[in-house]
Length: 110
Image 1 (cartoon, one colour):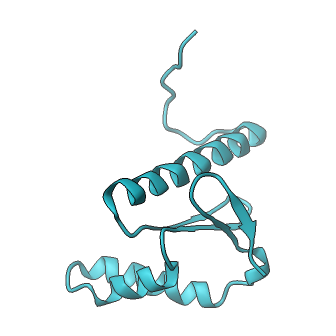
Image 2: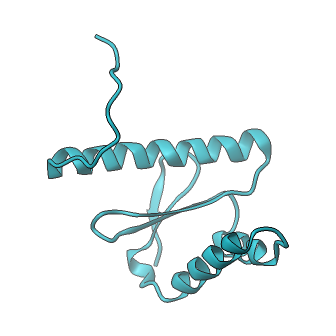
């Protein structure tokens, strides 16, 4: 039996939704790490779980990447989103922040 295509809609069952979130989060972080390695791209990824837990992946410093995006002379919306993210990063209780590095390895920040 192969994989089947699923409809993109909210998963009503809480357990299935949590399982899907965990698996897709890991997959997204792996893809970001691969893109960073293969293309020498600087990538920062912020994910908030449904429970409010913050996960951050960065190929280098997430804060520096967001600050760098503020200096970008391109799209105004990108600069506003990055400014908002940098501001929120400074107000987060760092004991709750999980930082994911290459692959699916995660560690708790103190």
